[in-house]
Length: 472
Image (cartoon, rainbow, N blue to C red; front, side, top):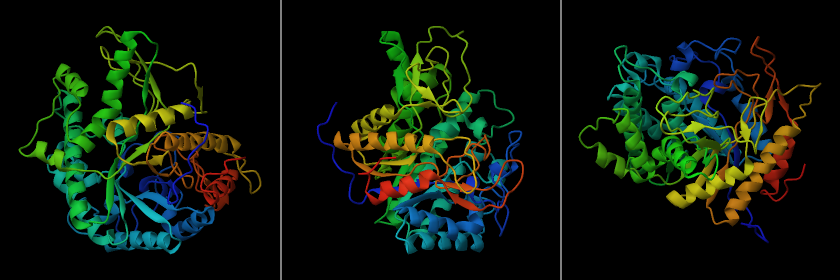
């Protein structure tokens, strides 16, 4: 659809950026913080540990001041579960409460709205020892954590995200160091989707609790959405794309928004003898959760072709965004119409608009972009970082948001990944996403000095014009 005139961005649009606690804070066992799954996992060879990261824990005032200099209206960050509850439940750590109080207050000092992710890939290690998400008690663990957050921060935090990329936790958990399976597990698929079911119930209860404890707050899920194209107009490829969309995308949002299991996903689970066990009351709990908006991470689309045999050889995929498949359901397909990043991720700005339109058409809730960005090998030259490639990437994606707004999609904000350089999930700090450069490497902790990238100055201009000036 072409438009002769574009609608402007909303007056109170949340221009900002995102981080997560375990990837940016450092101080991973400092001031009473307990270990998370990220602290005890085996790190990919050659990548930085999490003891320092960008040391946001000790530099948060400087970092928030830089965000304010850019003109941020919002800052999306996560709260480390074990900084609040070192063992996952039980005693609250006052130093953890103090840190996040200080961070929230620092944001508010500059009129930056804090958008808080409750869980971002960092299950407490002590809870993993007790069965992690396989244990039905995980529902109560998470709801208790939510209650502590709402009690301590709900007077100032009015936008909450439940679980970051729950679909990726389920589909590629081992890649991000988060899947803990019982030793006697005989059906991995069934166990993984039972864990997922517990997460969904926990999320639903947390949403209900949020609305009860903080009536003026808004809360929503934050999956990673990659709309799936068919590899061709062959009917078999269209069916494959429908399968992949259901398994990767719609299942999680159908549960979060409607409280029902997607029929195609359920058929897939039946084929694998992997349907989850419902505890008494689960169906009602799921239907009682009413998110106020949908947060979603978008990096690219995906493409699928037919898999017509249970014996098809299927690529397992390298990370969250690379093509994979399920024999008999779909096969991942490299889209020849798209370019790729240095790390092999396809770049598809128009697919961003496709995704926003589809999300809004399916769920009719306001949308908040919680991640979108370009990982690259940035180079510090003197005190400059010339990242025109990132400017181009963000420029093209922001254009698509305005097109989606003109299409009638209700958009709350844009919080790309990431505000500052941080440790990527399994590719270290060499894969940089930030608008702010942090002087450190995977091999050794550097000065940790902050530098403004070219994209910093560009984004500042974008925000000042409320998206009207996207020029280089």
